Length: 149
Image (cartoon, rainbow, N blue to C red; front, side):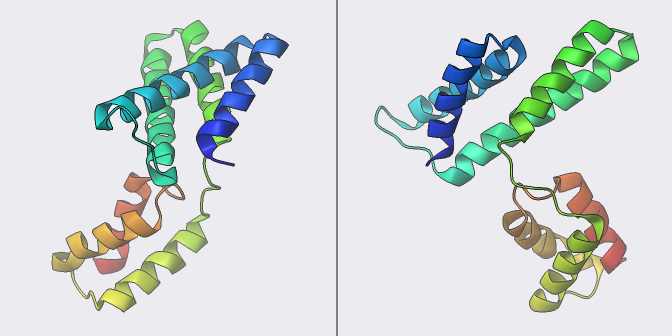
């Protein structure tokens, strides 16, 4: 079952359960999917990778907003953003642990024959493709710098 089909099904369930948080989060995903499809063309279909990227982007937006609301002392809005991010994270692949991330990046570095910080761009390109959805870009960048530096 495609991710978009799962989202649609869960959206219906959230409506029936009157779960406002899940409903808002899933509607945002559905809207983002629709916008992405229409920008490609009338009968375009999103790949699984594109759908995951959209959900990752929405989770990141929620987390960034939550950080801003925390700074401003807006706990009511903070809780809403955190709750919506939690709903959306259910659709993302499991995050890698710190050790798993290190092992994966070491293998990428060995495979590419990278040896210094000059090779960081090459390693980052391969790592972000391979670890899409499994690790945050910031975490990947920090690990690559640590291992090449």
